[in-house]
Length: 106
Image (cartoon, rainbow, N blue to C red; front, side, top):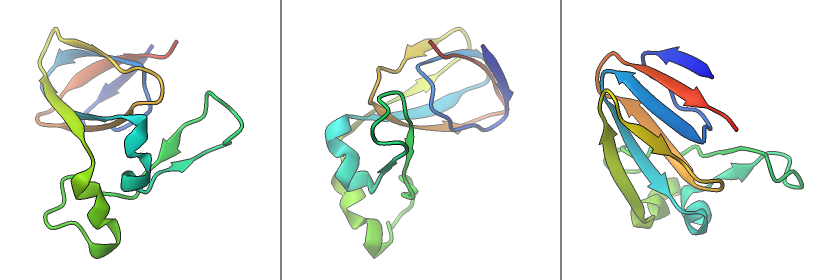
């Protein structure tokens, strides 16, 4: 497992919140074009991509305006919470407070 203190945004399948609070958004794979996302090693099914979009920017820059139409679900993780993030689900993570999380990659 990986331990992180403070803000983090990383590809991870499971996050357990130990202390503090985190805001999380999840986007389905179908939203990839709206997020202007890239895929690393496109032939590798275990590769991660990135998006240049600052999803909480208000307003979004014109180049990323389509991201405003991307469907997502959101939640706040509190101490003791765990969230499983399925394969191919884009996610955005922001610490709301100083926090400690444990991430499991499997």
